[in-house]
Length: 109
Image 1 (tube, helix red, strand yellow):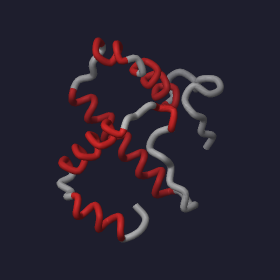
Image 2 (cartoon, rainbow, N blue to C red):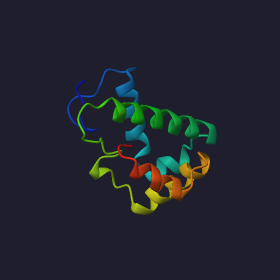
Image 3 (cartoon, rainbow, N blue to C red):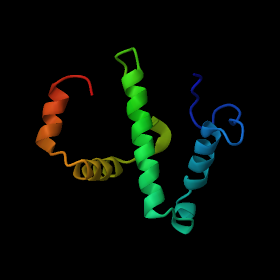
C-alpha cells in the first residue's frame, strides 16, 4: 500500500476511500467551515468509531515494532485536544487511568 501524507502528490480518484478522506480533511481544516458546516453528533461519533477501528487494525497488523503515530506532526493537534479526546474515550469505554497504566505495563498496545 502506498501511503502519502495528505496534500502530497496527486489526489486519489474521486469516490475512493482515500479521496473521500482527503476531501473531508481539506474541507474541515478551516475552523470557519467546521463551525458553519457542522456534522451531526451521530455522524461525528460514527467517524470517530470508524477511525479508531481503522487505526487499531493498522497498528496491530504492522510487522515491525514501529507504531504508526495517530496523526502527522504537522497536523497542529494540541496537547489539550489530545487530553480531552483521551479523557472522553476512556470514559466512553469505561477505562480507568489505573487500568491504562496496567495495560501499558503489559507491553505492546
